[in-house]
Length: 119
Image (cartoon, rainbow, N blue to C red; front, side):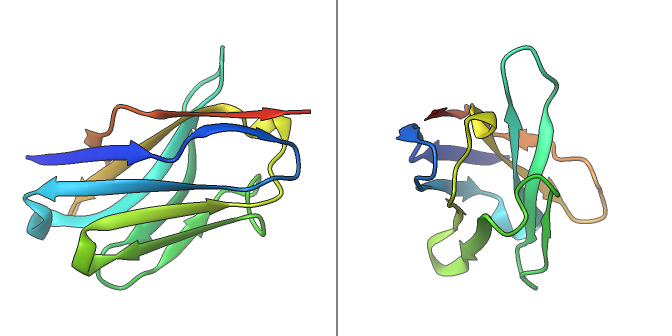
């Protein structure tokens, strides 16, 4: 099992920045990838960004490219999402997720952290 705990959400004005953190614990040797999903009110989950745990290969949704940066600190078992130039449409609950090797399914989810961007 893998446990994920997010932190760093909050309220920010449009154009501002926030950094989300995800502390991972448990059977991390089985994890190949981590990422962030978000869910805005009344909308489906959206995959925002991912990073491979060892190689550091990244993916960004078009909606956040150039504004968000994902990173990880393997020594601390922690992943980050630096969010700059925030927009009201970035308002959502952000979830840290993880997947095991040889699967594309993110089966481990954190409890989520609220990000609210005011206009």
